[in-house]
Length: 454
Image (cartoon, rainbow, N blue to C red; front, side, top):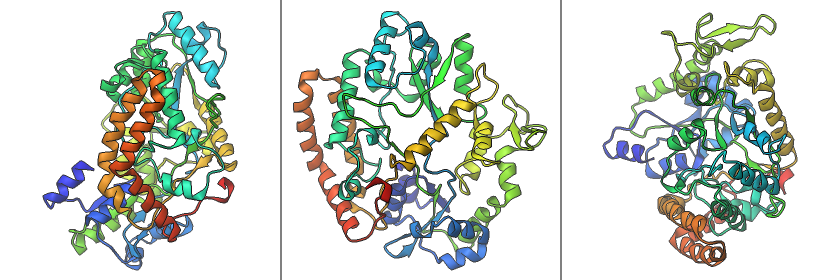
């Protein structure tokens, strides 16, 4: 966001501005970065892209304040997060008497304590500093069914919800983990790359990330820890004492939110739309996602589906995560065949362990939870929430400060500090943010809570 602000201040915005998070793109619109456009004109230049938006019921999300600002990429299977997986040290669990990944808080505390006592890791949970946006997602700690008003005021992960009962329970658990020694005592000065290195080097129990056929950090892990065994964290983990449920945040029902610079010329705007239409062509998208047959992928003769070559290093080598930065404007995920085929193609290859079936299992677990009302879709507003624009940066910084103090305080100090920091957070702008969100909802300028979550 800082980079875009700097580009805007120097009148150097790119023609295409795109993000997965609606609050960021609405902020761009509010700041004047984006141009409005005529969707009929877009449809003439990019008919396939436009028709896919129509078929996916996405047009309702393309406007703010009655003006068209966005085109939207596809997101197949949006109500699950199968492409994001959590890996844990199964070999350590087996050494301390577990034949499964802990599924309750009691099991987790018991397992982490035994891992410490066995000398396998001093601080098994590891940990890193939080970055603000997307931090401390508290969906599992909420009370269900939610009221529509509370859901609307909660907004999304753009601003952490300090002061809510859900965040109280979440941070209380973080405080317990810190005081039990599970958490790296220097997490607050540990960046994400260092956290990853700690897992690779065998000092922490857990790490997570997006899956792809070639995952460098997993390759490095097995090189550093020959004979190690990992497992994928299943869905359904609950905190029986804290009253949690296996709820999670789903993705939006669209992929990239694509806006266009307010300083773009008509020709530049048309060129952007032509690029989007070109990228959405089946043969182009396939080549961008898979590469060149016989080099970056082969074809499985039994399924006739592509299979990525995990260790390919020739001159056709693709960019990060199968060149996703180029084709994500059209769709959020690689597609080929059924969901199980897609996961098989996306699962990490060339490792001592095959995680394909475990990832498929997590997908179906999430699908079942989503159908039961525990896959939570955030509210989306069709008007800018001006208080978010004004206060989000301040609130994100204050949250980091208050959170660290709450995590590292003595347990007996937690309640009083939580009350104190909640009051400061509300006065710093969060109360105004919630009030404006609620007003927008009451005025009919937002999505509604799905029926299966009421």
